[in-house]
Image 1 (cartoon, rainbow, N blue to C red):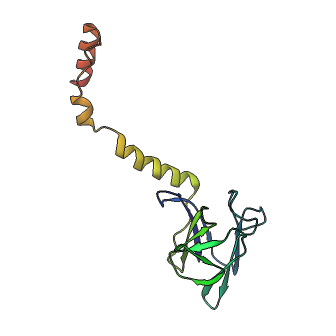
Image 2 (cartoon, one colour; image 1 turned 180 degrees about the vertical axis):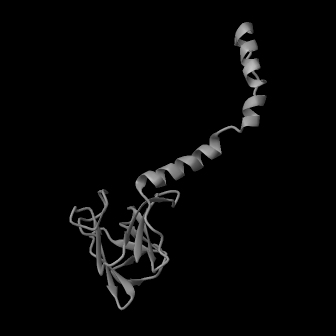
Image 3 (tube, helix red, strand yellow; image 1 turned 30 degrees about the vertical axis):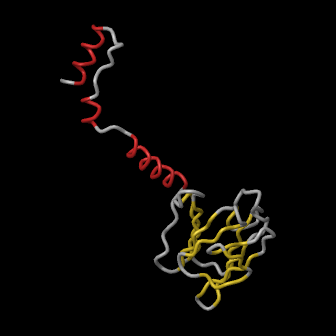
Length: 153
């Protein structure tokens, strides 16, 4: 199994994943005839190919804007599990997981839901913070009393 995961450009969190069980060839690019289609102006129509050879995966760069691993331009190389490939110098990053333990792909909705949950945990006040928050003095006295009763049952 091989899994390709599109990473967020700044936070390196998964945006979308594609898993392939019985493929010997995987094409990535902007054109709709690829196995993985990425809509980015810097991604070539046929940017990279991944080929399975003798239990290993080989990456071949076909893109005119280059393909990078660890900041170095590559044309062809054997991929190691966990490698992060950048399509073009400023393009999308894809992490490649190889082997039986490669993660199953998640739907875009699952990934978005997880990310939103993480974000809300960072910004939402706790119940204790909400209860101890003072009622603004700009609230009319009758409304202030009603709000205080709601917070202190």
